[in-house]
Length: 472
Image 1 (tube, rainbow, N blue to C red):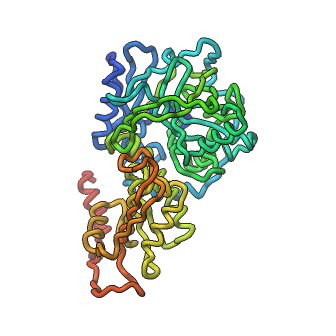
Image 2: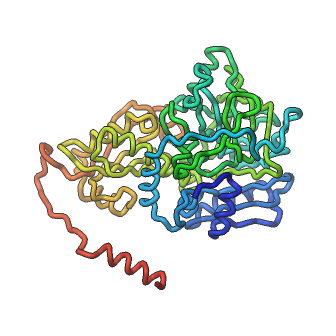
Image 3: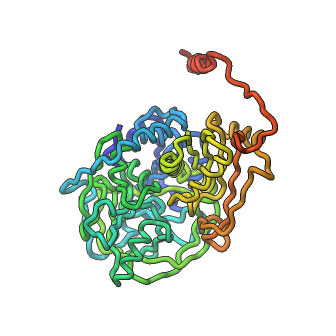
């Protein structure tokens, strides 16, 4: 099942018992952030829709992606689908790319248009997500920009998720780190001494949000990937009002403006996905000059903080699958990749071992991928019979397959994720590789052991017991 917009997905969540409505009036702080944290603490926590927010006129929804049940429903799968099955289904749909988007002349996002007296506070129920945030942050935006060197190249249009701090009624700050695609666009625009036009879509089809936070190649289209992950059904796009930018036709709100060249102002602190505040940095600013939105728009935002919260569910498999695809191209022996931990700062790779030292070679290939290079810090490589999504099996491999003086490697002075509080200076790190695979020739293995295998018919009995538990 594909959803045409956020509202259709919210209806599905409500039908499946994965959305709750808060009908009484709440304060923006601390209630919305606290509810986002609380929903993430619950097993299969629901989305939370606030119908009345004090001081504002529009609704807020949070935790839309914030559970494996919601994640499965986003993909049109039963809400109790196991994580590993969701991984393999995502991997299957990945190969449908590209499914070209459908361009339409207009859409719900154009119902209201504002070009004068821009005031974000009249449209968005803004609030601090965590207590010591330096201001009001928009944490779930799809930011659309184009390579100014190739302004008509659809495939060099980027849709990314970057944190946004509201600086005033028509000014926002945005974090564009050097390894983000938008940073390439910004660098080129500043070299031309031109502002970079952007369109910021809020409240979209959940698959588009999913793709906006997915590390794909520079000249691949997030929208065409979204069509693939929708099972082959294209997404509907409309042109922005002020630039050659494509935005989801069903978006709740679209903010249009330009990044002011070479202007940097203080941004942050912000409670980030590693579970710590990021501190204050000099970041670029956007001047908003046009807003379009639906009638009575719903403001979708997410909670992020100490894992696990909504952002971890959102970025878990959309980090794992691209890394798996990139490794698989070089090493077909790779069976699965679990990069669910802190946006791939921690990665577990399951692989067949072709020759001695193979596990380390696979890990080093990971560290040369566009995402693995800056993000991945702790890499664990296990045998093909170890499920990388089953931490009990991974711990078995660590405790029975690792000879620390031989199998643990440190690589110093590497690129790092600056939001990782252990990165010092920010953006530099030491990488850790743990090879927990079984040694094969010519690597010495002084002891050979016979693994205990599951008895015959174990799988059939698993299914039988599941049915008995379900009362069937």
